[in-house]
Image (cartoon, rainbow, N blue to C red; front, side, top):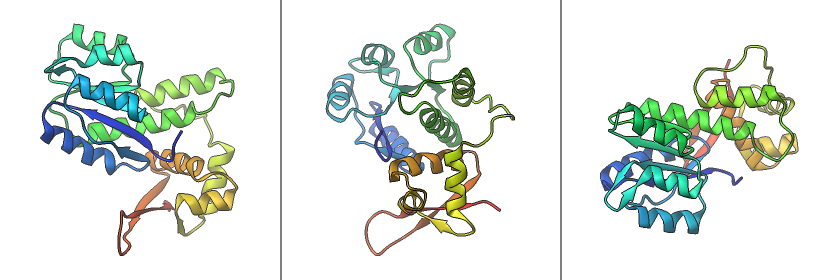
Length: 217
């Protein structure tokens, strides 16, 4: 997995695509790729960029977003004004990890992105998964919470200890703990999603703001 989860946005309305792009880019641990407006453009983008997640409308001028998800096998959040049961069931059968009805509040998408990041973090790697982790991943993805008996992982405890009473970037935490920046970023994003840590932005003279993390008191 790369440092940040990359998201390809597919919507035939460029204003909606840019709106969703802004929401994704503001999420810790995420980067939005250039939005696309058709199935054909999405297929090209999926082949060229191999994003982690597809954020797609269902009805496109040149095809069907649900069919695209089913054919490509990419993790996807489908977005549509369609509110009928058959469409929703078809979306879920295609392998979509989420379905949002238009219009929706911003927090509906940010919440789903938070849960997806935690779900990905829990299922990262190729280690054997105990049933508890499988159950926890499904509970996180579907927003049903986590079992109260599940304690923080050893790595998360080290990450929190590395933060201490101050703040640090993912790179700094990774160096202190002895893990990669990408691994530190995933754990920090998961802790932020559970409001265990908070994310602060530090603006430099040029470039994008740096994400800084601090334990909540």
